[in-house]
Length: 227
Image 1 (tube, rainbow, N blue to C red):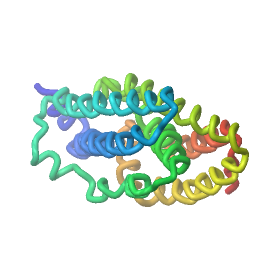
Image 2 (image 1 turned 120 degrees about the vertical axis):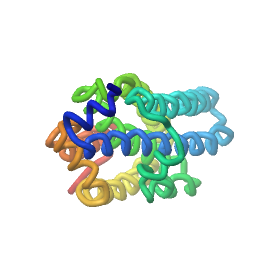
Image 3 (image 1 turned 180 degrees about the vertical axis):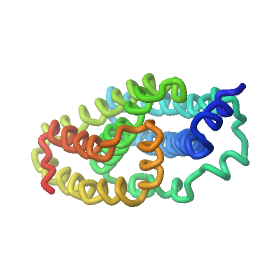
């Protein structure tokens, strides 16, 4: 019996649907991040920081393969019908704000700290702990995402050290994401989160953990999160 058949037999189709939704949409998110890294690699003049982005993009290529391999690990084929069924309709718009931005500060906060260091990190870390049999590569991916978070924070700190007015500009972006995170978690992707909690893939307090992670990461940069 393939793993996906065992999942359906023991837990029902709903759990399998949730797992496949995670794999498919993480995959397409990685493609967006690769494009975002590619946009900024030629713009950076500091070689160390340029290499951060090259490393970042290379990791995302590996991660995209791991997400596809995760579907194969379940005993299923990665094909157009799978993508059509499980790809969220708005996935192509998730990174529009960052892909169209010419403000590297906004991209560092929005991608490295918020999207990867908070949202993706919380999901990956929890799933790696709760269901490693379904998500065997997630611990490794989470570890590498932690490096991307560190890259972003190093560049942000360098920018702030060189010009203290950057902190005020960064705070504006933090305030925007502060207004985004709760509607996103409690409304926009609420169904997927609820399914994850129901089946023990996510912890019951996933949303609160993600919000706390947001507060911790922003505070570590000296940026305030005032609700």
